[in-house]
Amino acid sequence: MRWCVSIGAVLVAGAIAGGDVAGIAAPGPKNQLSHQLGQRSADKETVPSVDVELVLAVDVSYSMDMDELAIQREGYAQAIISKEFLQALKTGPNGKISVTYFEWAASSDQKIIIPWRVIDGPETADAVANEIMKTPIRRASRTSISGAINFAMPLFDENPHRGLRRVIDISGDGPNNNGSPVTIARDAALEKGITINGLPIMVKEPSYSTMDIDNLDFYYEDCVIGGPGSFVVTIKDRDKFKEAIRTKLLLEVAGVTPEPRIVPVAGKEPRVSCMIGEKIWQDRWGR
Image (cartoon, rainbow, N blue to C red):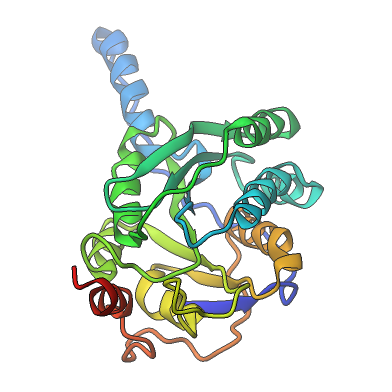
């Protein structure tokens, strides 16, 4: 079931419920060493050591101006070290998360800024935030949300830390216009048990010179997000940019599903065509 939430409309509360982990039978004396080695390997594969594995996928396409890119970068860094974020971190059964942060544009353009890191308190949060801020800001052409999802999925296999939940967090200011259709990538992620949340950025009026569309929030709700408890936090005011990022991360870390702003859209026809970005690009540039 998918939801959309306005920033400031929710209070993060409660804790995520941890599932029971099946025990491993005690070994016989002759196989003590081999059992211990096997148990360590099994533990890494089956026992969650973090509350969530979180992939932050951040749009750096040319439709984002330099000011937006700077505010976006600062928003993530400040959210990670905020008192509210660190408090939410403590609500989980493990009290820590694993996070990776990458920037994306075209279907073949993704750059990892922060490889998988564990955040378990102020020191590790500061280290991640500092690394985000020191990376030079860049911009690139095209917008491939599908490319970002396809790039994110195998990252979970590379993560040495298993989480209770796996989440891809996508921010962007336009629809998919490059690579495979976004719904194909989304459905592939959902089949793997991955949840996708969205942060549609709608601080500018749609313009013919850009790939902006009306109702980008509807597009994200109906075409991009999915999975248990998935949601959208929409940014419609530049001054609320950082607040929106913090709200979204708090919800994801605490595992809280926000109160719905609208009726759940699962199972309904998309209100905005999921191929609208590809159509606009074709109509304007014929390729």
